[in-house]
Length: 162
Image (cartoon, rainbow, N blue to C red; front, side):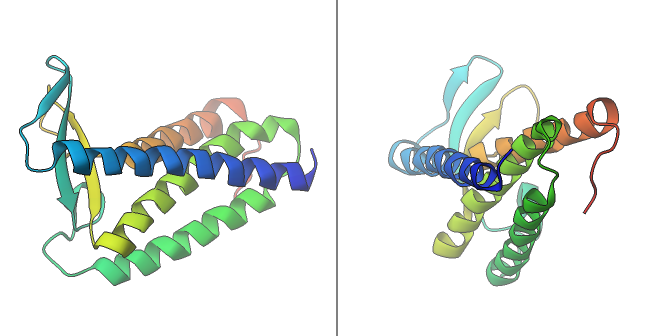
């Protein structure tokens, strides 16, 4: 694989995933803010608007952590991009590249909200369990983390660590 293609895939994929996340957040503001919950799948998934000023699952929500969290997230995103660039160019490492792109896109989506709004816009809610409201960027990161754990344990025997 060519380094230019690797980075082209990174930036194009990130742009598409980020656009989807930001579009859904914008849609939620226009269609859900100040309204009652909407059910998407009865007893399973619903839509409700919530602004989360804290970190994951509302952690640190009581503190004014906008800028410390933003700086920390920016540093983490730089590390993720650095790791992506350091991955070997062999085809078998696409199993790692794709989740890394998801982590990066999700991180950027929530960073954009935090910097511009001071909070992250959430709108997806599980109805069958008491679970914090989340957004598409959170889904990207969660799917990526579980994918990376699976790949590290069962697929790529020589998982490259930074």
